[in-house]
View (cartoon, helix red, strand yellow):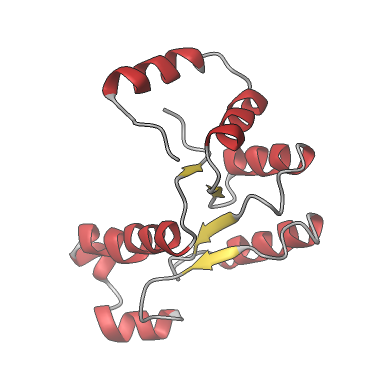
Length: 151
């Protein structure tokens, strides 16, 4: 069962891990949550976490999730393939989530307009990042996730 997350408990956890190593944080997550994942965009900090998870033999038991906004650079898609090959077979089951009802950029643009990011950045962010993340959390039954984002 998931512990109760009161403000006091969160402050205590933040204090405990203020100077902790990534290994300590990942070990804690693995002991605390039965269903957790890494959500990554394959940036530098996410890659460090992924590599540490591999070294700690958390892959493939702990899922890795990425959000494909359909607006990524070709180099990003190439990097994802390269990373999958590097960690093969541990990263065979990379969970990729895209905007709902749009499997490619052409469909997204037809449905929402090619300049949605400019016309309505909040809606764009929701459709391409928030909703796919929420869907990943629900479909995978996750209690928690780690990212490369700093506090």
